[in-house]
Length: 462
Image 1 (cartoon, rainbow, N blue to C red):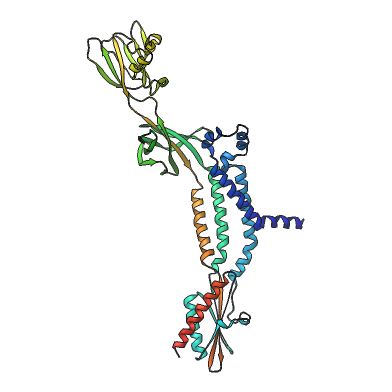
Image 2: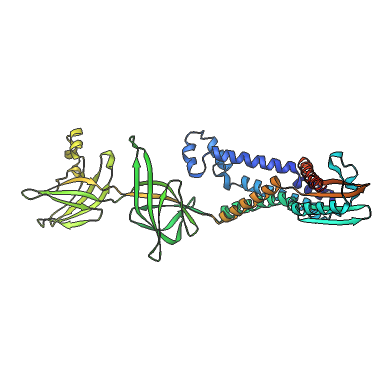
């Protein structure tokens, strides 16, 4: 039983497993980058085999970052990092707490000739110079005076021993932040016509409405087009309200999200809003022409008191025949319902019998009036993507931890230095030794700099 547990623990603690998991996560992330995800997958599905699409959908390829596969791989990586850290951390802790005695003849047993020098001075002078140098370069310095000389030990960079564990923690925090955002995050969308206010969003996937703790109003939507008709830029002027009071105004652009009370708004789409205003002209035989701005639901009494006029619908492009307004005129004796097209003359040219065949296309159906549509007022709605990710600050914290851990690993290392000052006739023999668990070339170079600086200082005092 113990052997089985040991084997399982060894498997989850292995570096090979960590490499394999990182490779698989990177592979799935690459797939998630190349294959359109979620809403964008609809257009992609039209270009692939009808047999392949259900399989990919079942494998959650189109929502990879929320898939069971991705979460399982992230969880296995977290287990691997935790077990690796628990297995190796006690050794790092012992090395961190290790006290290096100044008198340690073992480290000087195989000191190369370039790590020693002889100078004509006394032991005390050389020892004081060595102590001053070490205190300037290191924090933890110890001295031991013995009958055969003076010995020093110093340490530096001990916290670098924890750099790899800080990186491990940062990855664990990153995974926790991603899962937190995936489970408790909110993703939705909302369409807001110009001048109107929204107090809820539709949740992605479910489509269920989610009330917002505030209201957002689209004051204005602006779009610019290229000469070929493609949109160049579009912008929403938003105002956020709480209890009817304006709290903040912001301009929302593509790739420039706006954040308010933990919710992040993205400019994702736009379109023509239904029910815009239309400019109608009303002509009556023997009377002046009246021009009015109307919208759906607008009604008024005709100038001659013949009946009541009402606008039923405003269409931007009815049956590909251009802008049109559906109106109704009710009198005591009759009720006429008909369409008023802006491009009625072009319709007559293309089909001279159109009005005879379809009386509802006759703008003069209610006598003695004739209606004309002069134009529509363009009104847009703005399509907003709305996200709230409670894992964002957690992911930001993981980034800071990762940077700190990498800086410790790359720019620092734990090392211990020993210096011995031993009398040799009328000279003093100075030797230096060191120990490090990594970066041996850097340690040797550091010892050479220390020895050269100490030698230069002592020789100048001769």
